[in-house]
Amino acid sequence: MGLREQWAETLMGLLVLVLAAGFLVYSLSVGGVGSKPGGYDVTAKFGQVGSLAPGAAVSVAGVKVGTVSEIRLDPKTFLAVTKLSLDPTVKLPSDSTAKITSDSLLGGVHVAIAPGGAIDDIKPGGEIENTQGAVDLFGLIGSVMRPQGGAEAPAAPAPGAAAPAVSDATVAPESY
Image (cartoon, rainbow, N blue to C red; front, side, top):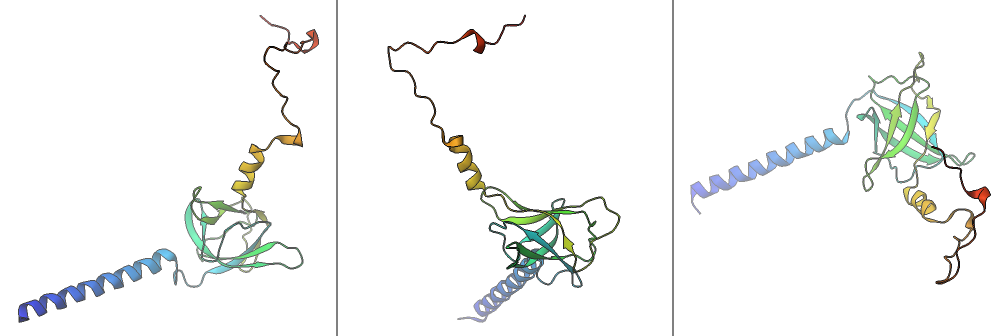
């Protein structure tokens, strides 16, 4: 192998290392790992968290302002207690609302915060009291598909059978 070929292989190796390091820095910055030191934590309690997991985004108006750092079950209330780590520059009014929402039908879930209009802010370690848990989309679709009240739909009349009589009381008057 000649000197020229060794030099080309060395350059290619360095290029691969630089690209790998660049990708690592990019993924850490996008993932929020190590970003915004000095942030603060708030809690929010939900009746249902669905597939929310630690590391999920927390957003205000679609802009990422933090991450979900912890999810645990309160053994007394049986509510899911989430700890949200927020950017130190974001100050949330005390009447803000936290909602677990999905990015798309197949996408991940995140916590979306709608700021309220109160003058006082939620302090570090405080709680977002107004919450809306995750919606069970499959359960919702299933409840729409099932007949309501357990009643069967009336059967269609047999072929050749007379249609049921309609009384005058059930016919709406015509208005012109």
